[in-house]
Length: 301
Image (tube, rainbow, N blue to C red; front, side, top):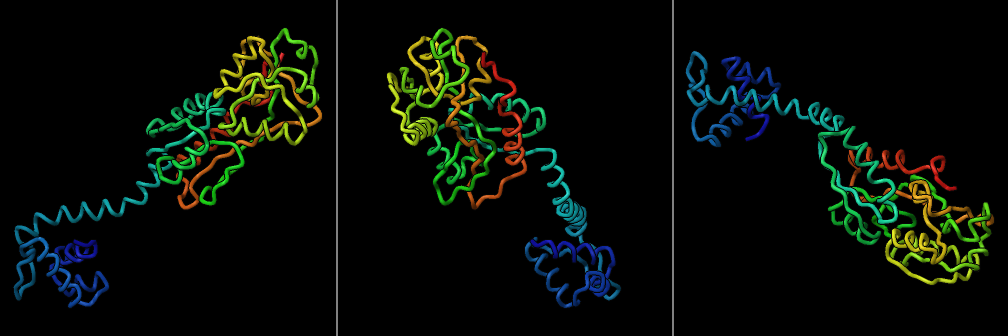
């Protein structure tokens, strides 16, 4: 059953004539008649009583007519209804976050997203960059929030912000007495390092290598929260995202800047290059940029 067949059927029913219906539909009468016959064959019974006086609906035709009107009305409303539902935020979006970003922005993003789009479904996944890239390509993720660079030809990225890495120091530590540190002062103290399985760990290693800094690493850990705990216990210092400094209200850690060579990372949204970002995915990216902890909030004592 095709849409134009229903249109022809309605035209014949309303005009009572195949010829007038053909004129109304701007098609040749033989073509219209052929399509009506195909429709009758598909339904399995005649839709019109044909006579010299004209045509009238059979019982089957009478039953089909309101259904045909309803089908065409629904088809005509598909586009405006879809546009309205998209703007209202109805639908589903699946997003991935790397573990060194998720704790600082994800709760805020979820709260804002649910407030703005209560009719939407938000699925959240936290994993390493490689797993998020696989999810984007396989289609289980619509968008991922990660840090640059992302080395994959099928992944497109949009840089959202540049984040400074801060030196996390135990409050009673000697280094906490300085307002800022030089990059080579990092060599003087035991260092708590995040595993290079995380892009942040690799970024810290690369930064120190570029600056010819030989860190005294006393602990490798797989979790940023463990890095923070080790700093609190006085086991050493570390380089951590500014978002952690902004979010930390414990008062147990002091955060200082590296003045002569600023370590940074770039936070970005990533998606599969062959997949168009949905309205909800674009809105989620906007919220990440909006809600990411900013420098004017830090509790850096």
